[in-house]
Image (cartoon, rainbow, N blue to C red; front, side, top):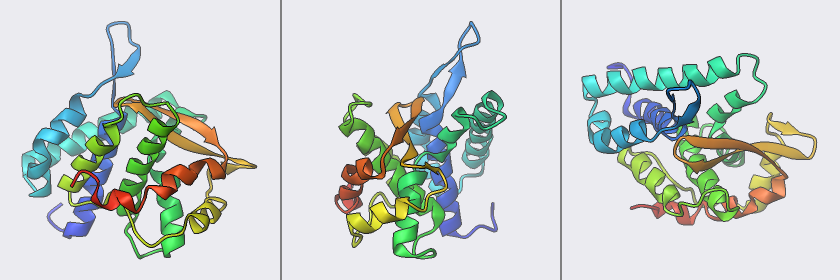
Length: 208
């Protein structure tokens, strides 16, 4: 970790935040249920993570690996749930493609995509907590990650979604956060992403 430059560390912290949004835990019956404990921990320890506190980083990596491992274990053949690990990637990949690869680091594009996909979930009535996009944006900004981007046309972004590997004929799988710990995959037509793309520029200052 000490060899990572600041930009790479930020991108890694973006993955930590993603796992905070995805966290589930098993209840007494062995069923997987939503949990916000890791997200709350990230909110409380964001400055420690950004300042490379060794103990905080070790815990964040350990818990992130546990959350990711639990998701993979539930979907070893990649038939569905593992797709939740693509949180932020549908809009993030479109941003990367429209800007040209290298203009933003992958983790930065995914951070922007995570906020926009959460906003889309609110707009589509999947997420009742209208403050959730700002909550996620605040944590990402504490990690010095971007939450929006300027200068991209919606039509360019829609065209970029046609190149997404998750696209299946006329639809594409998009992650929809219903709440912390409850993220679901939803098939959408590329045009249905338009409201999320339209918010990218105003999201630059979200939760500032």
